[in-house]
Amino acid sequence: MQHGGGDDLDDDFVPDDLVALSDGGEELDSASLESWTGVELDDQDGGEPSDQTQLKKRKRREKEKDKKAKKRKLAESNVVITPASVASQPPEALSEYLAQTHVKACPKLSSIELDELRIPAEWIADTSAWSTAPRTLDVLPEFIGKVLPSLKTRLGQRPKNPGAPTLLFITGAALRVVDVVRILKAMKGSNPKAGDIAKLFAKHVKIEEQVHYLKRTKVGAAAGTPGRIGKLINDTDALSLSALSHIILDTSYVDKKNRSMFEIPETRQEVFQLVLDTKPIRDALASGKTSLVLF
Image 1 (spheres, helix red, strand yellow):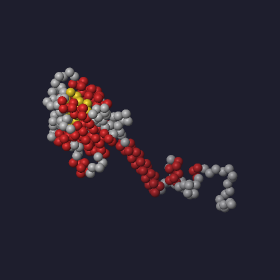
Image 2 (cartoon, helix red, strand yellow):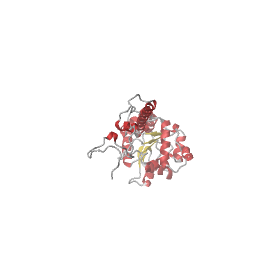
Image 3 (cartoon, helix red, strand yellow):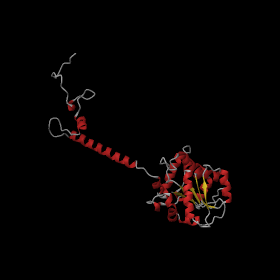
Image 4 (cartoon, helix red, strand yellow):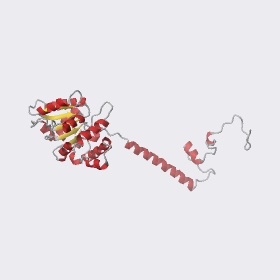
């Protein structure tokens, strides 16, 4: 069946893209054509653009400007903050960071409970003076000497009681614990007064062995995983906090999957539930005798 109306077209006629019908069968208006071609069109009569046309053009330009601004803002907000850059922030920012991490670690806690367990800024040591330098194990002795001078002094002193370190260094992996202990032992050197450096993790080591070791050994520092350190503090009397002056959280270290200790769900949960949220640790921090350090 043939449709009437309009001039007959040659069989090989191909309609020009700019005058083709839209999907709905209607001719494209000037706004659609301008969007398609990128060329602003004047009024069809060839005269001066009307006020309404100018207004539409101005609105389109403003919309494009807003879109570009939103894209820039989104790109800025997606800048990855490395663990090292987090640790270098002042105490107020670190308190907020820990509060946000706490929500992820303990999602079942109410907002009231989370507020009660919040780590205030005054419990956190200010290490922002080390903001531009890396936080890697090879510079740990220098880091302690510059921003934690009192800890450096205490590490060189003879411990009074067995199992009562001045430093707890908490990290997320057993192999990392071994590396930390090696650095701390090198820092201690041959000082006969300095206490032993304890390795506290669960891999291949029974907790009973560590209890026996701590009860008979004067340690100046203990490095370990949050799970094992938490159990020794809460379930035994072998690890004392009586001489504790600093707790260092190894937040700058990342594993093979590029995850820090606060990005691994199980480790993050252990840090809070078995260490930071416990009464012995909170009492030590609240007393002012112990400071929390993010390394």
